[in-house]
Structure formats: structure tokens, C-alpha cells
Length: 315
Image (cartoon, rainbow, N blue to C red; front, side, top):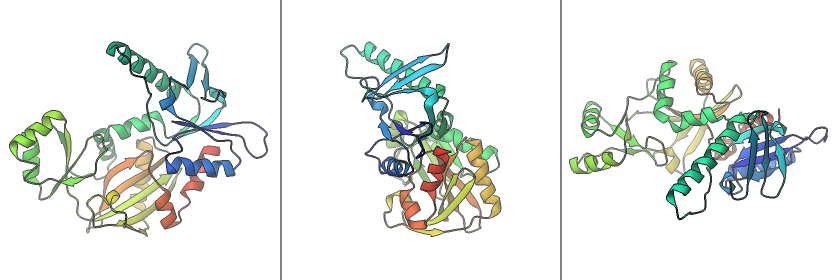
């Protein structure tokens, strides 16, 4: 979804900010309120309304393009100052009897939407390219490793033999989806039962990793600023723990520099990086999210994440 903001309090020049998100998302709603208080005119733009209610027109030869919101408001692409990427919902094609027509309609709509995202000259927080890195998590891990940041021993595979071999080498092993969408779990003997393992891996590959002992650290990076907290939780995946405690931490300068290097390598102007801090003091990279949740973190720590985002979007 896209989100629309306009103009400063001085009303000198009307500028629009698009934010992918909608009112059902507390983070998008929060930013809408804060941007409105800062003098912006805000409206939600839901890409799921394309092509049924949202209109897009673009001329590649002249670079002239227009975005018409469901209420009839029309935006010229150069009028869009910046875009905040909260959630990307794709498009919605009403059910068609002909499956080939359904496929063509979906592909044409998605191609048009992607073209708008890439052609719009606004500043994106974050860009389509950064979003692609997040979708391809194995590639993200590889890129981070290439710049010298430690990552867990990892296997992406749908081969039962390779999975069993990996598990035998490591004392404790976790698994999670390659793309995301489910929480991390420990691998048990039940998971490795031959028929079950073969059946599961014939449906989709999986990410297998060595379990890293230590403490969860989350670091937010935005426009050169770095904010970190320890997440104290007994859960394997702290996202499942509503009682998790946050404690502010100061990163070693070397790790802080790694945070900035990761954000640059993954083309992220705004991100949350998850680390595992080992008892040895080594920080192991787990993931960098291009559109992280931040409200609970901000409320618990007092870090000015909202203000940093507003400054970045309205600069």
C-alpha cells in the first residue's frame, strides 16, 4: 500500500509522501498521526485496490506518470517527495472464469505496479532493491558474510541427505522458512524421521542453521544513527514472547561500524538488525529487516525512532 502526505505548515509548496501501509497496521497509523501533526496532508493508498479502484498511468517515453487515488485525487509522479515502505500487499484481481485471463491480468497489474515503484523519482525508505534482498534471505546472508560479518553456519536445502548430514555435524540445530512467515524451531528426531523429512522437503526447501548460544540484540539503523537493546527472553524466537524485557546496550565501535556497513550493502536507509551475542563477546548476524516494527522498542527504550523517520521522510 502507498500512503500520501503533503506540504509543510508554511504552505509554500505542496509535497506528497507515499507510505506503503494501511490503517489496520498500527505502525502506519502512528506515522500518519505524527506526520499530520508535523504539517503533512496524509492519506492511505492501498495497492490491493489496484486495478479495481486505484488508477496508474505512465508514459515511458516522456516519464510522465499519474497516480489517481480511490477518492479521485490525482498525483503527478514528480510531486511525490518520498515513500515509506511499511507493507507491500500486491494487487487484487477479481476472480475470473478463465484461468489464463486471471494470470494475464495479475501479471499485467503487478508489472504496472512494479514499474510505478521503480519509475517514481521519490526517495524510498526503503527501495524496491532493498526489499528484494529481504525476500531472498539466503542472498542477504551471503552478502553480509562477504563484507566480513559473522553469520551462523547455514544450509538451504530440500535434500534429506544434506539436511541429516548438517544436523549430525552440529550439536543443536534450528530450522525456519527460507522466505519467512513462521517462527524458528529446534530440529527434533521427529522432524528427521525419513518419510516425514522426505515428504516435507519434496514440498519446499528449508533453512537449517546451527543454534547460536547467547543473548538477543536488536539494532536499529536509520540515516547513520544506531540504537541497540538487549532482548531478554527465554523463548527460542523472542517475537513469541510478549514478556520480553528490553535493556539498552552500547555496541562496540567495531560492531557499530558493521551495522552501518550492513545497511549500506543491503541498500537500507532504515532497518532493524538482529544479532546473537555469544558468551565470547562475538556478535553473530541473524537478519536485517527493511520494514521493522518499532513502536514497542521505542516506548521501552525512549530512542527517537519516530522522529528520525519523520525527519527522513520530510527532509
